Length: 348
Image 1 (cartoon, rainbow, N blue to C red):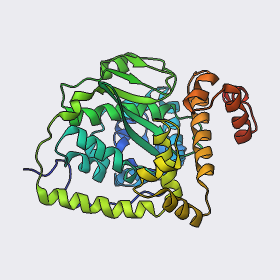
Image 2: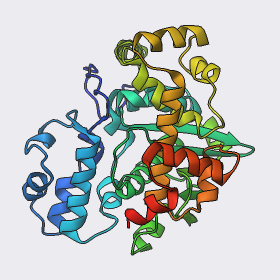
Image 3: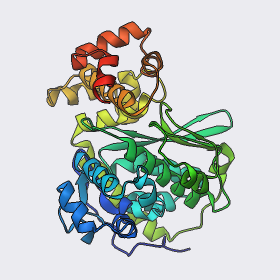
């Protein structure tokens, strides 16, 4: 029995505040920029990011600023898939306590469920989901924070990281069945074909890695029981702190639930381990109504799909469980003051 590699005996980490993610997943950013002949300090300064952010990989970055940093890297390198290059060496251990909770599991399936369940301890701006149908499963990435102007680099990088997470759990011999991206295709697909070695689909309604279900049964190496208890204790402490900001937590759950089907309050309450009335009471204490949160999440998803993909309006309407495209257009005008087509054209 061993302690997972890549960590010391200390597991305590702070919970990132709403809309933030840890910088550890892009630890290779300075090195990749140097490979393009770009000074990392210049990129950080141009993006308005503090110069010492990479001194501690547990430092967090606000997601809108993160988007600005990746956009700056794209501009300075003239590479429209720079995030894929930055993240292609990111491993499960780069996710700190969340990665450790996955590696402490008995099987790959249990580990992946642990990762998904606790992912918001790493990032409060995004969600990870595990969905299944028949013999296939999908490991899905979504952005749960609003106000992101262009999420293309996020989707390219996140799916790349997801591939490595699954490979760490399933073994180096594993390959996906297919990979989908909720963004348009970059200018050069050759690096993607070399890396994923699987069919690629762009302009999808979700960013996901699709794989055969049997890989979830793979046994993981045994770890020291004392280490597992330490990780579980830290996870419990951090989840208690996270649930204190309930509206933000409900928004993230809603982003996951929308992948599965229409998101009732009962479904979300069950995800949080509480009764519907308890959830409603806690939300009222925050001065928030469930319907408002659901509308806000649908509006965020709609804007992202209109901005970052070439999906038809009818497809987006169906993706958000509107009965008709006309009903979706009415709701979208209420959210933004524009029709979906006007919003898409303005972003070009």
